[in-house]
Image (cartoon, rainbow, N blue to C red; front, side, top):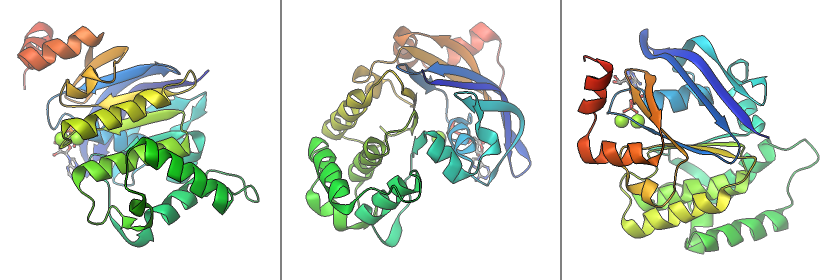
Length: 252
Ligand code: ADP
Ligand code: MG
Ligand code: MG
């Protein structure tokens, strides 16, 4: 069974400490949500876990099924089963979506065991249909000229094809209209599995109406300061974060 454990994680960017001892434990089959005010380090957490070179981890650990992720390079982390769908996916000119996806899949496979072109196309087309994506997106340059909703759907397509063990969605719901939100949520729900854990980073409770989290965590000042069930997300949506600060004596 998948076990993902973060303990006492501290990370800095350009010498400024952003993550200040963050701990979180997730098992396969579970959906966790992290909510928190802007600038509290949510995206930093996602980037630090993925091994983004701008973020320096100074303390703590992150393990996936007993393997130390922090010792691994970016590609190795992906091979170990970590996947991040980003708030602002990058555009890559000159690389088509389909080429990008196929090389991402093959980068996670052993040499000599690459996916055949025919099998890949069949899988990709099947998933694109599920996500109600126009087939022409396969042949467009990655994210170039994609609308916000199209980029997010494309991130979900990548997730579906890569079949990861730990999925981190960083504000995938921002800027989505309700139809795109539902499709993204359906994609996530369809990917729920006993050996896969989800970490949904979100500002709003909206997405959580469609993807029911098992655990909701509040992040403030670089740490998880409070955890609960779905009712916590509803209260944050209704009342904001001030009551959490008051309860915990947090001053900013
Ligand atoms: P959140 O996702 O919770 O809104 P971020 O992780 O994006 O928060 O940002 C946390 C803090 O790190 C903020 O104070 C932000 O200004 C700072 N920060 C983020 N990215 C950079 C960067 N590339 N360079 C300098 N500071 C950054
Ligand atoms: Mg932000
Ligand atoms: Mg962010």
